[in-house]
Length: 78
Image 1 (tube, rainbow, N blue to C red):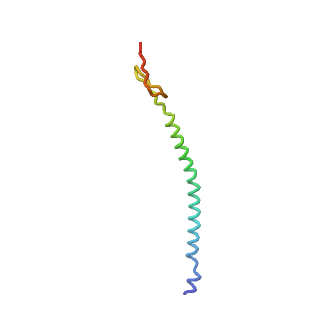
Image 2 (cartoon, one colour):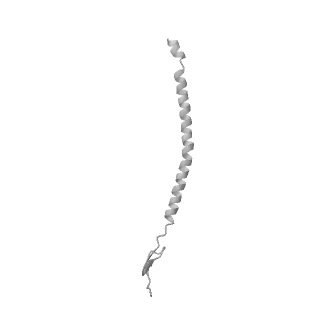
Image 3 (tube, helix red, strand yellow):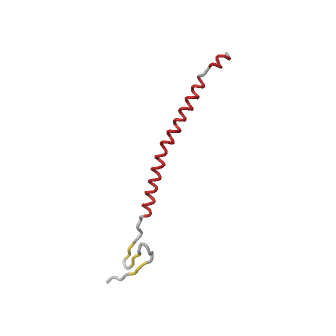
């Protein structure tokens, strides 16, 4: 019985397969997540450029605010 247990390799084969499958899975996750990371970075970059390009100039009857100065300029109609 001890000799049979010593020669039994079924558990070893399952362990080796598990290690191989998990190694391949981890490598696939790393390879798959790299383009996802790059896509998220590109989208955040586009979002930051869009927020930076927002024009906050506004006009009110009788007054306007310039984009760069931030100070109101009164104008008279008529």
